[in-house]
Image 1 (cartoon, one colour):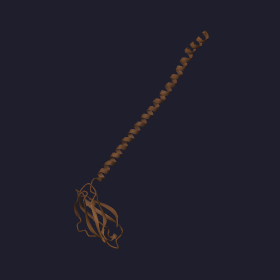
Image 2 (tube, helix red, strand yellow):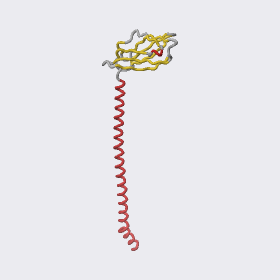
Image 3 (cartoon, one colour):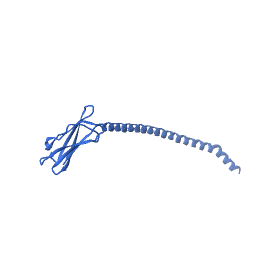
Length: 166
């Protein structure tokens, strides 16, 4: 029995402190590794936050550009067949501001005759439209370009080219 007691005493005096020391070294190395991982994670989180902020700024600028782009009149046109041999050009304001001195033009190479009895139209409110007669002949091109022209409240000139077909 004294022999077993001596073994337990030697283990308690020598082996346990060495094991505790080795275990504390292992814990120190692991905690150092965890600190390094945490620092890397903090750096990645910081870069991710910066990227997210830049992305939000870009989206805000994009929305502002869209809002500014949408602001203003937008005059569009198309030719509509009313009956056999009778056509009208319909001009409308799809923007969000009133347009002034609204006019349209179809280049002569398309051989479409414009009557232009009511243009230039003094002003065209948002969502409003007007129509004028056009003459389509056998020589007229089936695909054509219509250019709409207008001014804003400040007198700045704008155009819009639309491709149409009969």
